[in-house]
Length: 491
Image: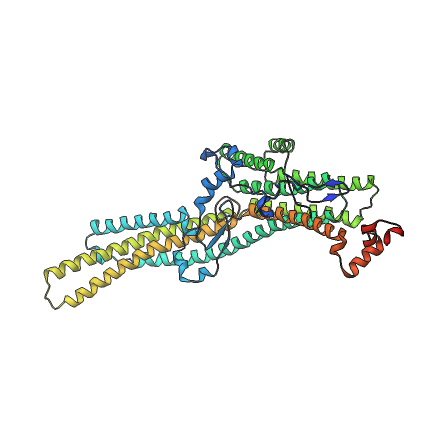
């Protein structure tokens, strides 16, 4: 294979035409193919003040946005800070106790719940000790029974919710991966057809661009805010996606303008832009058939039908993703579960505060008695009751510190599983999936070129394959290649 040099070097030559992979810079010394596949940067919220021109400065994005997501060796993060892999073996060791980064406990909504509950518990305990006479005799049994009843009920509901959320998450992952797989199969099938360079390049870049646009659409479909704010957020995110696609030569400016018009006319409903892209792809597939007919090249009907089926598969996966994202868990169930979790955490904080305050009052009383009567025969009983009250204080502190955080953490995990598209580290690394697809398409193209070079080089062919080529006259004989033709030149 000839060395690649210059921007957009050809991946192969086809009947005098050169094919250029869209969005791919030429390899430089020391670079791999993966280094030349464009990676979509992390979405920059509008309030950060960064302009679209920052998208062109990858080093700036790396310094400003990616480095702050540095994680321990337990994780492997993508270029935009999303987790790709984690060391599952390390989670089985005691080191898992000290891993907070990228975990659910690093989420602000989780650990702030623990702070709120501890504040409620501390206020309740203080009020009980100060305002209630003989607070050490205050009984908390009835309150504890009610809290325990809610605890059993919530555990059952959270278990069901987590199970359904994981199934929903897995269905989302499989739908998007199936979408990418259908694209790969579509491009592989096109390799078996003699198509022009323009048609092949256009179908490939439309397919890759549609994946990025689909990611943007399903991401923004998960957010519900007031109409003006949501429209601004969606447009900002979409503009960044368009800027990346144009910079990577996956879409042209005229095509982006047409997509903007579609967005304005339809209101930007989820999946509209992706469907538009696949309408373009379907049109180009039909153009391939027309080009073959004009060139009097027969495309077997099953092969053309296969192309249409793969396009329909991609549209089917888009519809499945739209259904998963737009059809949520019934609101009454989700609201009741969230309501019960917050009510239970609040009641648990009150219960722990009452028990803590009662035990604290017991400790104060027993310490006073022990200081006033240090040599009485009841010293052993007072000491035992003092230590028992201190133990109750410690247990209640641990309960209010850990239990509300765990319930909130499971609620947060279920929510994250239901809505896996976003910019946080725990969201699906969709951009990495698409970049991997792009890389595989480039490798597929280079593999075709390498194989064609091998098949045309007689020095690399051996055995029956070389004899078959020689018999078919597809490669020159050694005599012809060194001395030309004619009997006189064979001496």
